[in-house]
Amino acid sequence: QVELVESGGGLVQPGGSLRLTCELFGNMISNYIMGWYRQPPQKERELVALITPTGWKNYGDSVKGRFTISRDNARHEMYLQMTSLKPEDTAIYYCNRMRDLSTPGDDWGQGTQVTVSS
Image 1 (tube, rainbow, N blue to C red):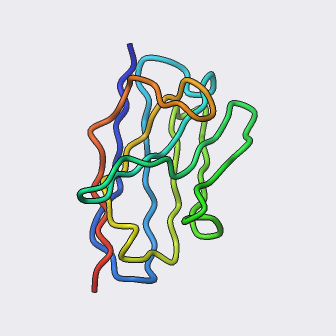
Image 2 (image 1 turned 30 degrees about the vertical axis):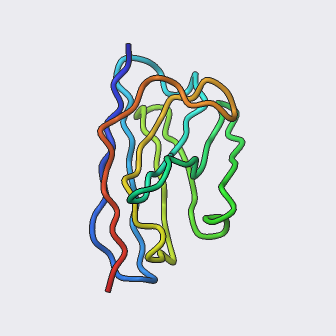
């Protein structure tokens, strides 16, 4: 069993930046495909970005060129650098230890709220 803890959310103005952090406890983050998901108000949870053990990355169309996913295996941490934020990026952001490139795993953190508003 693993525990995932997200942090770094907050209120930011449009065009601003935030960096989210996901800590994994209970296993080695380097072994897994890790993903960032988000759930906007009244909408389904969606995949934002993922990173594989080999470092391959993939992004949702709505965040390409603005968000960057990375990981620090020694710290068991994953990050999401978000720039040029838009109001539609407002959501609860979750990290996940994924089953494969398209399927989330059962382990979710508590999420971190990102609000983009002027």
